Each structure stands twice: as structure tokens, then as C-alpha cells.
Image 1 (spheres, chains in turn blue, purple):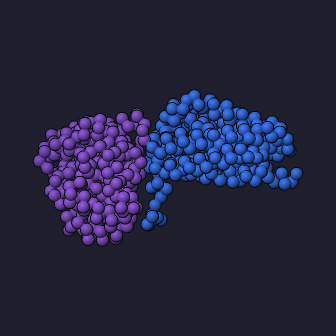
Image 2: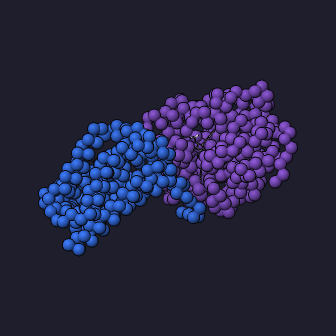
Image 3: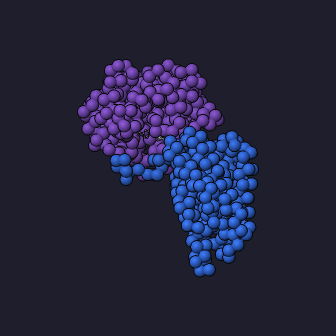
Length: 226
Length: 310
Ligand SMILES: NC(=O)c1ccc[n+]([C@@H]2O[C@H](COP(=O)([O-])OP(=O)(O)OC[C@H]3O[C@@H](n4cnc5c(N)ncnc54)[C@H](OP(=O)(O)O)[C@@H]3O)[C@@H](O)[C@H]2O)c1
């Protein structure tokens, strides 16, 4: 791009906040009542993180993999692409993340915290997951928008990326660092998009991402110390 | 700069427009009549074009949302009903082309719409293919105007556009830029290629084109479309906090938006400004700026000075 320094972030924003918000309203209506299913799946993931042992080691990445692939298809390809020609370029990243989770489920599984000592970072990550499941959807009404525009875990990318980061922060194993790349990238991108749009919740996803990153580091340090 | 005397320093343009203005034009929120819009000739053909058109960046990118598609269609309907002609879009604008197509289908394609679009693809060999896709989205027989968006791969695209013009597939051709980008190169293309139109940013605060591009357009007989007349609304937000000038009536405007638009379209080298909007009342307000009086040169200076000191 020539004279790239003359461009501002707003030059790349193709749509208005009213269209973006309506996008979630339409998406929720089209997928209802899948939201109940994805939230239940989220609760099951939370339970797998809380209970001792590794019995959820394959279930957790499998569930996350299915949800990431679902979002790649239903949100990015079918929904977001209607207003953003960049969306089809993001969809493969979500697809890749989903495939990576499923490959992990088919292979060794995700190293859950299990019965190991639970450091503060772990507790914080589990709390973040709880917030992603139950506080993210009420952000919309809290900001004066209809509940129908809520962003729900497993349906919308932002709470899904944040929740995934929380799960990975609570887990062990080296692969989790790799699995954090796409959710972190997305959290930064969505933060920039919302910030450019002047949305009040612009900092939510990047803050969740930063917090999850810090929690992951805290868990690792505690593991090393143990 | 010194302000000018608050006398009736305005031009009355066009017989019908003047008559309508003196008879007291309807409030801008009311539907306008087609006859009352001031038009300027496209220099290369003499075809008259109303001085206010309609843009579609962001405003018409509504995807397949049925509610927002209908709201956009209502804006296009009000624009066409009010006598507006030029609608501008680009393949860069998300679903805007499809939205315009939806609106035109709903209206039963109005004959007088002046369809202006752009070619925006870095592969010069694929220009025709993209133009054909755009045409299908609009659902029209052919584009009136096809522009090279932001000078992207302009050499090759201009060749294609010249061929398409020669074979009657488009009526006019042009190039676009915005916010002062690549003006030197833009001027070189203006000076060396047979263009019918150029599209540039211009408003009461961003007046760089007055120095070279407008004189060159006049000299070469090129029509000038003005984008970003409201700086994507930033300008309206900025001025709205301040009182309208007490001498507002002299400009022929009744609101800040009209004040800003009248400034742009009263430049005699400007053929047409293309503000974008999501609102029917705004499209009517904007069209109404193309009726009645237009400020003369001295009043334009005063308008610019007033906004500058806000
Ligand atoms: N390089 C290029 O080729 C290029 C670059 C930029 C723009 N363009 C073209 O030029 C068009 C115009 O530029 P733009 O859309 O960027 O900016 P603009 O027309 O300066 O501003 C559009 C904004 O002004 C507001 N507005 C319109 N009429 C109003 C009124 N009467 N009162 C209050 N607010 C009003 C609209 O909000 P509401 O919806 O609330 O009315 C909209 O948000 C574009 O749509 C596009 O077609 C081309």
C-alpha cells in the first residue's frame, strides 16, 4: 500500500457499530437454541478442569475443537463475511485452531491440571473461564443493548477465544503455548476493531487475553517451583 | 481572513431552483422535487448532473440483514424520489453494491440513476471480471461511470476502461483518491489520460485540491466528484457543538450539514458531492443543499474562515 503512513485504523473499518451489533442479533437468532448447548459444553469443560485426574483430557480439546470449527464456518464464513471481506481470511485460522485441538484429542490429549497442586494462577484461570461463560453474554444488556445481541461462548468468537485462553492457562503441557497463538491474535484484532468502532467493550477481549497469558505464566512458574 | 459584508451575497442558480427557493422551498425533511435540484454539466459530454449524489462507504455495508437492507433501500428511494442521480460504490465497500442492487430492484430500476462504481483489484488482467461482478450486484445493464479506485494498478485498468468506453460498456471513466493521498501521481494521470471524471476529498477544512487539482480539472475538462464532504461525519460532530452563524440564511443553508455541503458544491469546478448516509431525513437534507442559493466566492471565504476559527 502506498503512503501507508497516511492511513488510520478507521480507514480499514468497513462497517458501523449498528451493523456489527445486528450481526450478533441475527447470528443468535439463526443458531438458537444452540447457545444453551454451547454453554452446557462450557460447563462440562469447567467441570473437567475442576475435577482431579485426567479423564477429561480428550474431551476438553475435542469440545473446543468442534466449537472453533463451528465458529469458523457459521460465524466467519457465513455471517461476518457478509460485511467484512477479510473474514474469509480469518476463518482458516479458526479452522486450524479447531483441527489442532481435535488432533490433540485424538493424540495425547490436553494435560489438565488434574490432582496436581493448584496454584493461584490456576484458580484465576478457572474464574476467568466462569466469567467468559456467564458474564460475557450479559455484557450486551449491561451496555444497554438487547440480550438478543449477546456474545455467547461457543457461538461468538470473542468469548470463545477468551475462554479457550483461560482453559489453556489452567492446563499444562508445552502444546498449550502454541494453542494460545490464534486466540491471542484474535483477541488483539477484535480489540482493535471494537476500539476503532468506538465500542465501550473494546478492552474486554484484550484484557481477558492479557490476564490469561499472565495466569499461564503464573501456573508455569508454580509448576517449576513445585 | 477578513470576513465579508453580511449582504445577500449569494448566487441564484437555475431558473426553477431560484423560483422554488423564492417561493419558500419545503423543509429539508420533506420529500424534495426532482426539478428543483441544481445540476452541473459533465464537461466531456454536457450531460447535466445534480450537484449532490450519494456515497455508500460503510453506510450500505449491511450484509444480508433484512431490516438494514430495507432501511438502506428507503435511503436510496428518498434519494431517487428527491431527484438525486449519482450513486457511488466500490467492490471495496463490503456488501454495499449488493445493497444498492437490492434497493434498485425494490424501486424497479429508476431510469435516471447515474451508476458510478470502481475497479479495485491489483491484478490488472482481472479488471473486467470484477466490473462484471459489480454490474451483476447492482443489477443494471451497464455502469455510467467506472473509476479506478485509489489509483490501484491504474495503467492497466485505464486501458481496460478506455476499451470498455469505446465499445459502449461504460459511459464515462475516471480515477479516485481520498484524503490528499498520491496527489502528484493523480495529477500526472489527469494530465496524461483522457478522463471524464476524477474523485477527490474536499471540504471546508481540507482544501488542498483548490491549488492544483481543481484548476487542472477545469483546464482538462474533467468532472470532479467530491468524497468525504463531512470527513466521515467528524466535521459535523466538530461544528455541531458550535452555534450556526447568524448569517446562515445568506448561504442558503438551514443546518450545519447543508452549510458544509453548500460550501463544497458552490465551488464552480465541483460537479457533484457524494455524502453517504443511513438516514432518510439526512439524504433529504443533503439533497436540499442542491436547491436554492449557492454561496459566491466571497461568501465561501467567509464560510471557511468561520469554520476554521471554531
Ligand atoms: N477513494 C475513494 O474512492 C473514496 C474514499 C472515500 C469516500 N469515497 C466515496 O465518497 C462517499 C462519501 O464519503 P464518506 O462516506 O467517507 O464520508 P462523508 O460522506 O463525509 O460522511 C458520511 C457520514 O456523514 C453522516 N451524514 C450524512 N449526511 C448527514 C446529515 N445531513 N447530517 C448529519 N450527518 C450526516 C453520515 O451519518 P448518518 O448515517 O447518521 O447520516 C455518515 O456517517 C463514500 O461513501 C464513498 O462512496 C470514495
